[in-house]
Length: 117
Length: 447
Image (cartoon, rainbow over all chains, first blue to last red; front, side, top):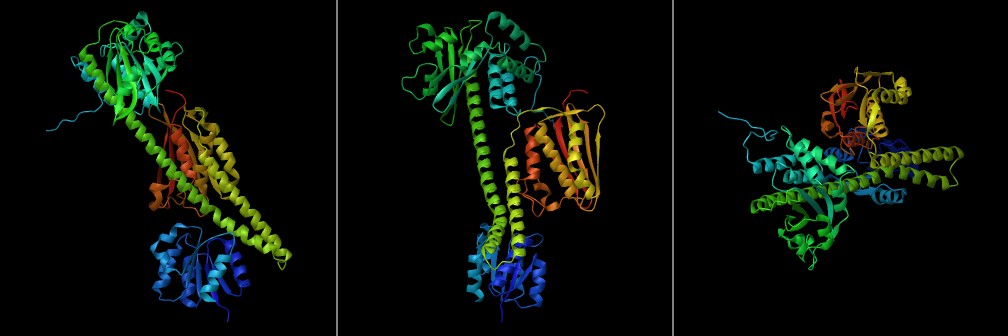
């Protein structure tokens, strides 16, 4: 059974890139461009891992994490952001990993492998 | 019963002691938006104004590192010039603003030979064997020199320039820091310097010292803020660059994979090219923002500027079904500004108005007079308005309501308006629209 990943990312082409690259790694990848759509999906379906950006219009990634926790869903979460500084934000501690976006996807891929296999 | 009084006194009732007038003028000048040199000019003017204290001439030195440099020298160059200056200064109703204006014109005119002479001198301070005038600054003491021509402690080069027997050196001090020196004399009237004159001049010296000190601190604060802003900007840019870099890197890696199909290769190349263009746009916006350097303030025709802005935005406005109208009040034709930056700023504000009207609407550019010598350029739209939550912060750098906005546009506009000596304000109601008002100096007076 392929592991199911949910990627929350507001840039369309980044969604395309993540979807292709992570599918290539053997995962079943769903991408959404905002936190509310992500929440609605999490309520309906079971995911093995959520990868979320922080800075997004409407609702940010930290609010998303808080709400996932409120749903008592035990899903590992990777924060994948351009911002180094949110690392000190209390709520980002709730995530299982904090990755600063880079031109190489290796760190992201190895972190996913570590968390879901 | 209460009585209210104004801080700012423009005319003193007859019989007001000279000292009180003098201190009042100096204290009031600190509240004026004058430059450092202008304010020191006020103090020196007060000390030398014919109707002021006893001094005829005042020379100012400012400390610059470990050097004391001649800044300006105020006073008549000859007896006949003294007569005419003092006549002007004792004209009834002559306020401190007029006196400064008069003295400033003296400083900048070519005929001002005194300042030219003093600008050439500089002395090392903090030297044990320093001669007068530098030694007053070094020892932080007021020094009255009598029979200067026979005084070995007076620098002979300085004696040649000042060419009087008696003069007074007042160092400008604050918090143990030496900031400069004032040298006063009575070259024209040849009156001996009295102890009362020394006391008053010393108070003026303390005030001037404190003023220079405050200005220096203020400048330091501004510099610190600038450094902080640059740091914040650097952080922000790092983040702005990251998403494009992830895409360029990621899609380029795919290109290197021989399994990648031809169709996908083409798509990747297009994405990479677009992201590179995005990087370039980020850099351009940043460069423009960092390079605001107002070089010239000239009267700029408002009608023409409106026309350029409208022409630049017409294609976009037509697509969005937005009509842009312009209106300039009769008799108002120009504003004083830097034409390139102000045009760009106005284009920016109008561009924002277009952003607020995705479903069509109206933008009105208008210009009208406001009070004496001022004009308002207003940009009004019927768009969605600015969210209440960020209304107070829209002119700050890095604040934006737009997804790919860098928060530089309005910060740029404000910087330009400020640099042109104006101010900007915004009125906005969510769902109703927004009006930006740029208050600027009109290019012509009284028309």
